[in-house]
Image 1 (tube, rainbow, N blue to C red):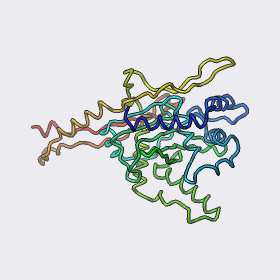
Image 2 (image 1 turned 90 degrees about the vertical axis):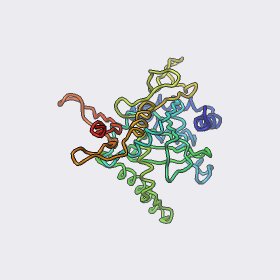
Image 3 (image 1 turned 45 degrees about the horizontal axis):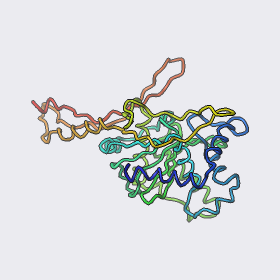
Image 4 (image 1 turned 135 degrees about the vertical axis):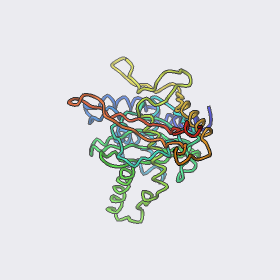
Length: 332
């Protein structure tokens, strides 16, 4: 196990020591869903409000005890959710590069993102290069549903090599682009700050093109996991697929239990090999006036609806990887 893989495990051990009754608290929240607690969608493990109650013990004044830059609720939401599957997704470096170059300028497919293979995933890859977060080792991704405002979010929790964590939030808005979803969150936060009379604390990070490109890379990797038939394989048990945890029978009912150890999932291993082979085979010479130049067609997202026209329909998203075009013509 590499140092990068051990980082999320170390962070998980930290919250286990800090909150020894965590599993009991989580199961209590799950049991109260739709009963003495508000309900939330099936694609969300626990909403942020539940994690806030666990972290503070119901007393929000406890937040003042944490360091100024710490975000204990965001960290707990990511780590506490990930604790029950502990899937570590190792993306092939060539796949990450190709996904990063795939445009995400169309509307964000919100429904597709709700098909995360697990409630929270941890993604790491040597090919992940973020301009604004140069020391990131990997990141958690999970979904949030505000039980009061009914707003939905895709939440990232970046894990840096020094073991610190940093949240990035993307609002899930139907009919909006990725950039618009990013801007919406920061504009709302800045509006709250201005209402408190602290305009100097407003963040301008949303207007950074580098930051926007970084977030789009994270979204693209998550979208790939949610797309139709992604190449994901279990290192120890080839042929198996990731899934969400299921409760087990215990005295008095059902309960969830944390995964005993991380599961390593290789993502895009064969695709990455094909991409590298295609790059090496790409001709350096151009074509003639009669035959178009051989080139590598950039990868792109392809979405379509499936199901009966008058019934429940599902939007399917596929990522079509880069392909060699006119290779045969060039060989002639």
